[in-house]
Amino acid sequence: MLPTAGPLVFVLCTALPLCAQLPSPAAALPTPSSGALSFREQASIYLHRTFSVGAFMAAAAPATFRMVSPPRTMDTQWRQGPGGFGRNLGDFTATELTASTTRFLYSAAMREDPRYVRSQSGSVPLRILHAIAWTGMARSSSGHPRPSLAVFASAAAGGFVTTTYAAPGFADSVHAGQRALMVWGGAAASNIFEEFAPEIKRLRARLHH
Image 1 (cartoon, rainbow, N blue to C red):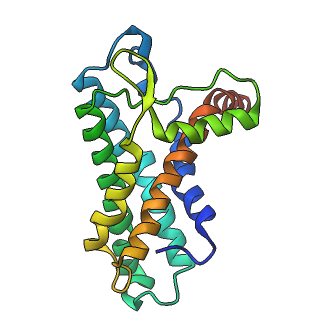
Image 2: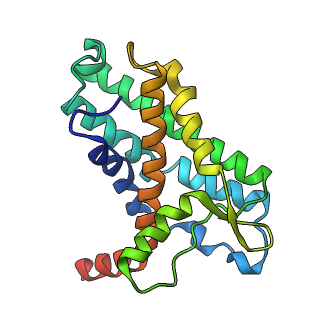
């Protein structure tokens, strides 16, 4: 289900709306060093990320992009009119919901802190690499970094579980793998935006003044 203009544009269309939510209410929760998050706090983060304007935009943006530049092999009912947009919006919403729910359940079951932890480096390239690497990392209940499969599990779920909602001809394993890659790429892009959230907030403040 890749847009014809390429996966990078698709990932950006998915992740860019998330920066509109910065700063996140999750930032008001206790820091990892103050102890493990309770299930209720994890659920609060999940609900904010999943049922918010930014999350809706994260599904609506790529759905709109697909309507503007649809794959040539996609069925006409998915390419044209309000019905086509509704199908695409439902498809991307299902992918986002499946991936987000899987990540939440995995993190809660494994007692992991799902919040992103910013780099302490002053180097922009190193901060970007840290953000990408953090897609495979999490904080344990004791506050220590450790490898995590939460993002990869959510990407696999978002890619393969949603084959039941995919357009005709796009429910095969190849397209499922592509969708999984897009979910992972969206998570990495979201981490990058979160890494540079202080700079983004300062820029927004300057623009408002």
